[in-house]
Image 1 (tube, helix red, strand yellow):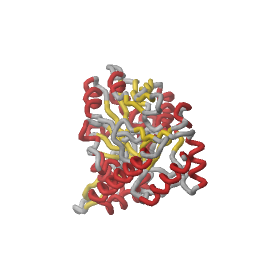
Image 2 (cartoon, rainbow, N blue to C red):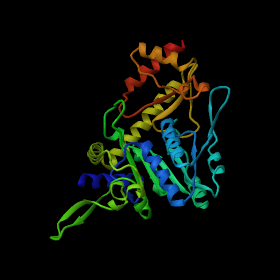
Image 3 (cartoon, rainbow, N blue to C red):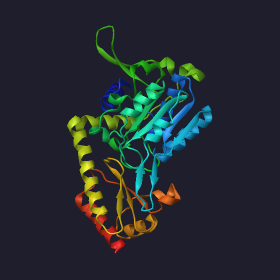
Image 4 (cartoon, one colour):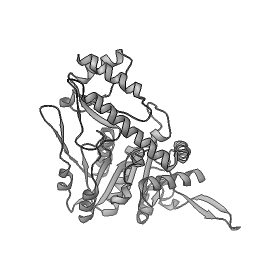
Length: 344
């Protein structure tokens, strides 16, 4: 219970929010639960999301929306020119908000790695009486403004990279934090600190009356468990890193990704397309279909980036590259050399 409490405290510090639960399955379900919470609070059913959200999260949102008869509006927020460059259409999100909107959910950074300015969106959302949901990368929050400081009502995220090694199929670690006034609508377990009759500090599962095992069909959520083991690993790692370590981790990601992007962008036939600031992920337009490029990279012992053509056919020459603090300069130079060899 104490580890849960410490985990909740760390999530609140990272996100700039008042309260957090003891974890959820993953970012996708945490975001979907946040959307349901917003619809319940506002008593509205329209949900606005940009199309730059992570595709699997969008699929989960669509599943939740169908079951609850919600209207999920996916807003196109980028275009691609004849040279394969991305162009931002972020203003389209604000244009989609009206008085029927329950919430707007955005991702920071988005699936393509760009970081959008969200202050104006938050103000527009609240002007229409809706709620603002932000799915944020906790590593990026080491250097980004906490969502709570620019108007987020609920913040979600994926804590996997701060807790667990890579694994196919999980487990994952969903983060969920919100304002104190929405505490009783928040899904999931909550650990609280209290004192016993002798004045000794203790920890308890609190506010359980909102949970499924008591409220049944009237519960705030059907989710009545969490990822406590992964949350414990997250707590240990983040407490070890501390604020300076989290900042350094994010700064390393930023520096290394920009070094990689500059080297790749200088190669003949390749172009980095980033209409906004980025920290870890960026898109590369390749001289041939990404599937062919990745085959060549694999032959040279390099695991290539994600083929965006799997999502949209017109993106078959666009590769999503992710660079983190774990990638050495030698790793990056090896990738660049293999890309140069393919383009030669």
